[in-house]
Amino acid sequence: MKQNLNLLIGLTLLLFTASGQGQIKTPENAIPKFEQFKNKEKFIKDDKLFYTGIGDPKLKPNLTEKINLAADDFKRLSEKGNATDKEYQNAIKIGLDRFADLYLKLDTGDRERVCYYFEELMDIVGLESSGGHLNIFMYGFDPTKK
Image (cartoon, rainbow, N blue to C red):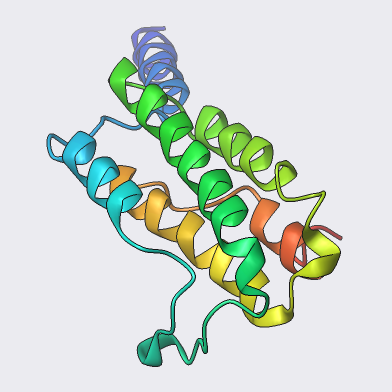
């Protein structure tokens, strides 16, 4: 009987521990990093990424605004101090949806660059997965889903 009680207590503790997973404790330096991210020039040539720069320079201000709005979304969530993976993944989806009106005007390199900017935002808060949203934006499907 005592062994069953210990097992039940152990499983209960495990359940409570598992339910807390998925929350991201905001790194102390996240807010200044969001500001640095927003202030840097975007969609410019980047030899490290083999990115030649924006395909259509007229799109640059609009694209920059959209990615900076995503940074604002991430910043707001990080200010909570304990946003969940799902909340950040939803912010990614909302952010990527903002590009819908320009999606067909973007070449592959520009779409990859958009995804790379979202990965930078994910790195700021320590988010490991976009929940498939980057793959859906880039390729039209999530290869992790069957």
